[in-house]
Image 1 (cartoon, rainbow, N blue to C red):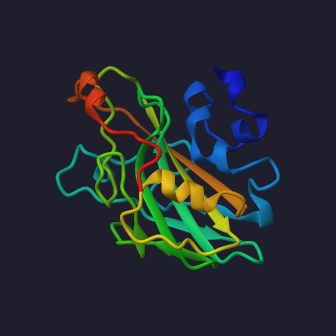
Image 2: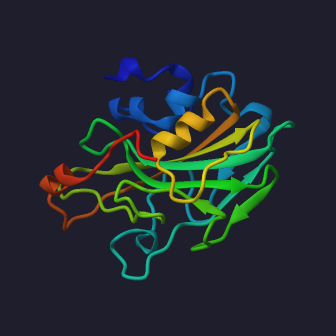
Length: 203
C-alpha cells in the first residue's frame, strides 16, 4: 500500500506505487541520506522516469546495460554500490536486475555495456545485467537504479547475493541517489515468474 512508501522515498521516485516499499533504498536509506552531499545519478540513455530503449532490454538480442554517471560523492565515502530493482514484479521481494560494487568513491561512470569491477547474483542467479522483460499485459514496470555511497568497503567476492550485500551495507550508507527507468513489453507469461528464486538471503 502507498502508505508504506515514506514521503522522502516518494519524492525521489518518478511515479510512486505500492511496490516501491520493497526497494533496497527503503531498507538501507533514510530521509537524511537521499541526495546527501548533492550526490546524483544520471544516464545519457534516458531521463529520470523515461522508458528504456529496447537496446537495454530483452527485446534485442545483443542488449547491454545502459550507461550511467554519478557526481558529488560525499566526503568520507569509501566505496559506491549500485542496486537495480524492479519493484513491480509480482513477488514478495523486488526483482533484482543488477548488483554492482567496488566502484571508486568519486565522480565516475559506467559506459554502455561496460563490465563493472564486481557484480553479484541477479534474480536469475547470474552475475550480469538482467535484461528487463516484464510479463505480458502487466503494464509498465519501473527499473530503479539505486546508488549508495558507503563509509566502508564491502568485503564480499563477486557473485554474492542481494541479501549478503544488503547486510554488509547496513549502517554504512552516507548518501543515496535514485534514477528510474520504465519498460513495458510483450512475449512473457506472468506465470513464468512463479519459478524464480527471489531469496533475499542469497550469498
